[in-house]
Length: 403
Image 1 (cartoon, rainbow, N blue to C red):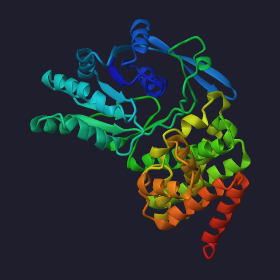
Image 2: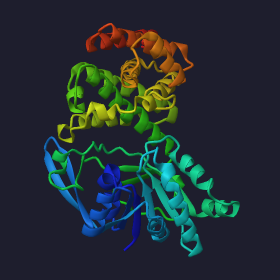
Image 3: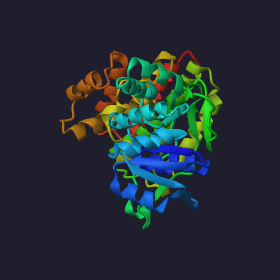
Image 4: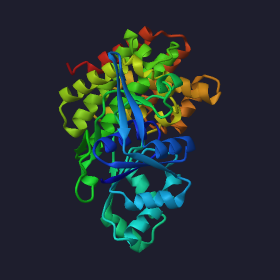
């Protein structure tokens, strides 16, 4: 049986990537530092995944698994040296801590004459392959770098499956259970593989992959964030509650359409396909059984207001492609408010403007002004309908002379 290493035994590692590898015929070794997870996986050799939906649940048993502790450098590097395929899902901020074990595993692999290794990088991070490559090569000699370039494929992936924080209710008496939505496709960068592309269930190799990265970030992640931040304004706990509010749904849907039009123009892809993707996503956002929260989806607003991330990055691409991001800016304004709330700063134009300048590094004065206009409406007590109407008027004005 072929061997795979899943570095990261959390929700995505167990609930998505590790499960796909196991169901594709691999014996999967998880590497994690959570002792309770490592112990149970290494003694029981299976764990449950529950697919949840508004129509009911389906339980799967993921088998042929084991685990080693990431703090055991010898065991972790040996697993990497011996595997046929590897993936990471540890979180962007944790990547730097797993690099030494990866480097040690690669050195053992090269010393024993092991073949090429493809590492599927399942991190929510722009240019994840380049980031990981830089971290690894910082620890390699010139000779090792040449071997690395020949034999290691760093394959970016786009994680579309929604996996919320797992509550005790979701675990339902099984500590390792992960509840997930049914959607389970894994787009990956076809051009990045070294050697034969492994046959993984529901893995979709695609080229050019940058389109899938931007589609995930600027449509899925952006629409999800807009829903969360607007839901937060009116006290919604769950995403399914927020998207059920007509004004939020319309703002989120139109924001996603703004990104879709920009992506269609930029990459030359059919707008109709992107519209179908949006319809699918909006339906998935209504999955009450997931119990995904506005708090989780809107977490880390500093990153989500970053210059290349879902709100500002999608707005800038839209402007570049001749699309006015009126509805995306409503979501960005709501994100500004949450950022300042979480930072413990007093709400106000000066503080918000500083965030756009320093966090978003926004140089486009017109875009910054639009976001600030919506932010001021929020502070003045504007309703969701007021925000939607303002965005409708801005969009209509931008279309004059075009239609």
